[in-house]
Length: 358
Image 1 (cartoon, rainbow, N blue to C red):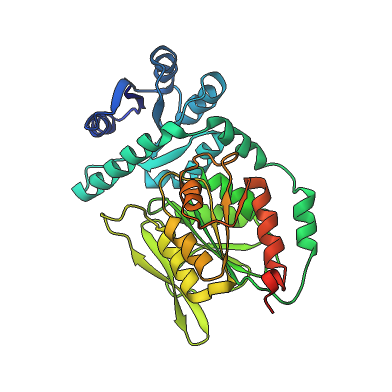
Image 2: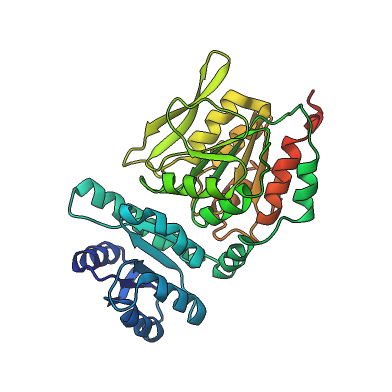
């Protein structure tokens, strides 16, 4: 049975372009096109689509108003379609229940259109296994106070630490998962953290700025040459891959541009393998929600080098693809639901004798 897609956009060019891209895949079917939110409401009820692509700015009823209505009346996976100028509003849509987003197609260059085509088809096909009930529960966690486990983990302070860096990989459902973890880290968190979140160019800087305002730790979009410092979180820029390099006795961020043929950008595998190489037993890998198998090899590299690895459990992962692949690969030591991951990370970082390390 084909996956039914409803396209909601007031731009004729965007509607036509996306319809052409989607219908090139024989497993997908565009069952309808809507030009505004009011039209989309009627067609969502009548056509019963499996997935909806949704523009932000539309006449009569905007994307946000439609999204609120949809998640209340007929919860359906939604991929927001946005321009780079709307990057800061993407996160509002994700908090309202949108599952993911893609950049709006333009007439600029064929390579850009090819990138959007690849991204759109991968996301639509990957969403057939999404758990909207889990997404809803995770969004509720964003406003919850810290549980007792995290409070106690923060109290266990020492001047010596076995884990120096935590590498985190995430994709679909990742922004909310990252917020849940990062906003629970203490201001004196003793390890550095590097993050690769599958996200296009232009969107990771607003993500880092937003999370930095909400968190006690310092969070920034990584820049090439940044020195790794404890208590700082570095988010890989969209469209690039993050690795590490050595300069004297210190480690630095090393960025390189992604290529069209790369399956995942940023690459969790590239980041984690580099962390394993430079930090060995002093590293930790955390793999969160996401489709595909990115992180499967990198998590195993961290574990093989003596580092510690954690995967988000199926009960909280919006898409269990990436954690499941790492688990099947034998790369995971501990499987935890999302609300318990921050506490585990803090507890292990604060334990100077973790695994008997001196």
